[in-house]
Length: 330
Ligand code: 8YV
Image (cartoon, rainbow, N blue to C red; front, side, top):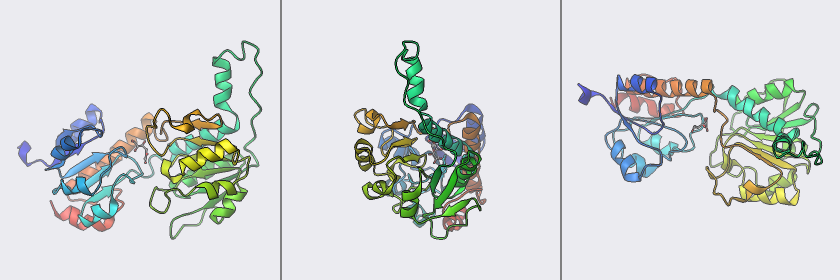
């Protein structure tokens, strides 16, 4: 009986109830995302499905060793870890988890903005390092976000959720979209060209997909256009900012600070210069890291995977043009 069930390779650690849901209809091969290449290739050699996260690069050579693969179901909205044109060429559906994490990521973006503006990290350290009890001088004052200008780059689902929240905090919101046919923003968000947005904003927040077009979207030139008092916030993907240029800009006072949930290399090397700058707030890629959101993401990722394996349209697919072949290869 088991031999007829499709093989699925899973590189995330699903909780027992999700594993049981998968095992009811698939033969599951669990492999760590950082397992040796040959282990991964062996697990994928007869697999029809792959359930993975952004931690697993799914490139041409990996797909070449997975001739039966029909669906790559990413546990996350970002899919820059997958070579999309190659997957499409091979008739492999690439699925993601949009929507269910927008509020969580937007909440964390606001948390970063407030952490920067109210010097939360410094003030908390002042208390726990006994600065307050020891009578040392308090950290410098923060700044109000009300009345400040927030420049949102990428007004998709998450960018819009950030805009809503920023509006509730009394911020002026401007936006720039990098997609070819952007939809109009809500009436409280004014569109801008990228350079205008950078010149005008007190806080610049990034919400784009990582693509060849958005790689190093903010580099030395763009950072130099920003106000000296401005902060850059990134909850999207690290490589959207040229991190070496950012470190230089932060050291030279070209901009005031950076609040980042993502870095160019994750996890960063211990000697990575950005880790020792005073004017940064850094988090370990936790935009979607709440119990509720991670459960909803996993549920959607499993639904996507099982739908394709059953020959049905998945709820969220980023290369719908690959679906006819992915579904018919049952
Ligand atoms: C996850 C993410 O942290 O959705 C994304 O694109 O980067 C995050 O939600 C990641 O996929 C889990 O490893």
